[in-house]
Length: 190
Image 1: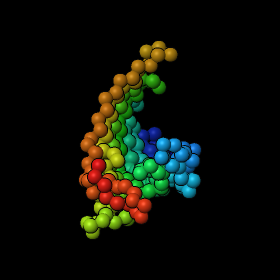
Image 2: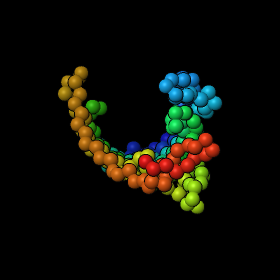
Image 3: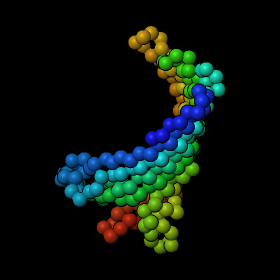
Image 4: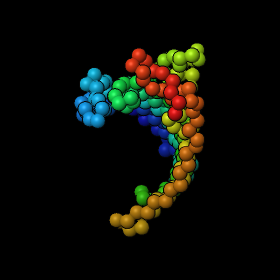
C-alpha cells in the first residue's frame, strides 16, 4: 500500500493485495452419501487493487471516494456431487462515504457502493448460443449497496449501534447459470 497526505485535509491511498483460500479437508477428501472430495483442487486466489481519495470538510466531518478492481480465480464449487475449481470472476466499482465523528466511538456514517460490473471471465462457450460466459453478469452481487448508521458509546463498556442497510437487485439471466457435465461448463436452468 501507499498513503500520501499532502495536507491535513486531503489524503490519497493506493492498495494492492492478493490472498488465497486453501481447499478444506471436506472439499479435498470427503466421501459421504455419494459426495466426493477432489484431492486435485487448487486454492482459490483473489487479487485486489484500490485507489482512494479522502477529504476532511471540518474537524468532525470527512468523506472519501474509492475505486476498486477485484479478480478471483480457481473458485471452488460443489456441483453434481463433486468439488471442482471453476471459473474466474472480475468486478470493479466505486464506493463513497461520508462520516461525522465526535469521539472514537460516537459517529454517524453514510456510504454507497456501486458495482459497475461483476463478470464471469471463464471464456466457456454456452452451447447452442454462440455466446461465452463472460457475456453475462453472474448475479453474485447486487449492483448497488447503501448503508446508513450511527455508533454511540453509552458507557465505557456499552456501545449502541443502529444501522440501515440496502442491497439492490441481483440481476442475472438464465443462460449464465452453469453446471459441469464432465466435459465442460454447460448451461443449466436456475
